[in-house]
Length: 165
Image 1 (cartoon, rainbow, N blue to C red):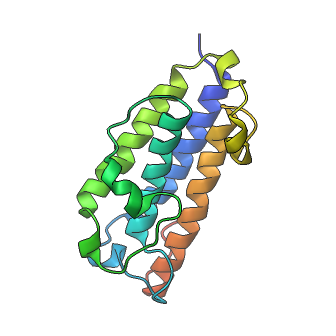
Image 2: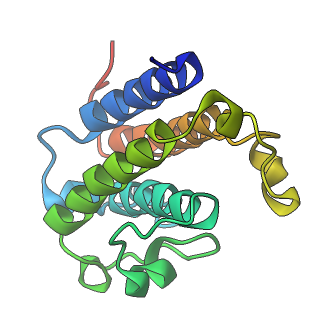
C-alpha cells in the first residue's frame, strides 16, 4: 500500500532537486566555485550543504548511517563558512556524488516510514523545521529552493543566463 504523505514529499523533493540540477548543468568546476561579490556562498558550497542537510536529518531523526564523510561537516554543515578556494573542498564529482547519495538515503528512510511514523512529532529542538517527521520533507524542499536562489545569484553574477524558464 502506498503512503500518500511520503509520495507527496518525495515528489516535492524531486522537483526541488530537478531544479537544482538544471542550475549546474554544463557548468565548469571554476564556475561552480565563483563568488561574484566575493562574499556569497558559491554553488559548490550550496551543493555540499544541501547534501549535508539530507545526511544530517537522516541520521539525527532517522537514526541511520548514510555514508556521509564526517570530515565534510566543517566544510558544509550548519555554521560552516564558504571558502573561496576550490582547493579547500572535495572535487566537484565527489560533492555531486554525495548530493545524489544522500537524497537516495533520505528517500530510503522516509519511504520506510508508515503514515503513523511520518505523523510523529519532530524532536523539540528540530521543530523549527516542522512539527512532524513528514513535514520535514517539505522543509527540506524549501531549504533546497532557498539555496537554489543563492546559486541563481552566482549564475547571474557570472553573466550566465537563466537555467529555468
